[in-house]
Image (cartoon, rainbow, N blue to C red):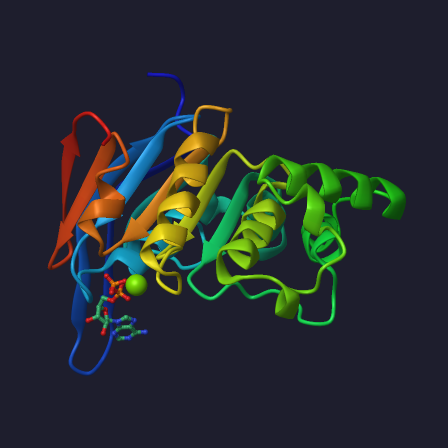
Length: 229
Ligand code: ADP
Ligand code: MG
């Protein structure tokens, strides 16, 4: 297996309370470049907690998180933010687009603070939108797009910096099943182009589309590998 993009070693999470609540039991995982992974489990099983730890948005109570082999606990807050911006993309159930900006400008915000010039940001944003099938929607604002199209804009924004890994937390939660299906197919297709994709879902049908599944129950992660549907 090639060097992991993200790795956790014995990572656990206990919220202090009172009373203290252990949400994630000690977990070790490695996610390789281009890998496609589903994290699946019922509501409250700790999926979003695990995703936040893998994505360096939250710190584990114990254990280590490594991005590109670097232990993020050793980084200053500013360095950690820079590493996250450069290497990690996020997509959420609610698309979190700026309502006043066109699709292309929304995606271009993914390149702010990357040192990319304005014209270049818009060129790359247009390219990213083409890659998610939205070449004909560049000037549309979120309110003029369907839910599935808005999620594609959010995916393009997450991908425009060409991250090593993309995390999607319940990306189909706000979509009807047919639209959700096409968004899942898009996400599964992105993996393998170099970017690892980790989709968090409570939906078994969504999880079945991914060749590697990490099953969470009461904060315990169990690996499952098999063919994708
Ligand atoms: P999932 O995404 O699988 O639905 P979460 O990771 O969001 O699960 O939450 C797992 C458990 O952790 C839930 O029981 C939730 O109430 C609890 N939890 C999440 N965040 C906090 C917090 N900040 N403080 C205390 N408990 C929390
Ligand atoms: Mg969740």
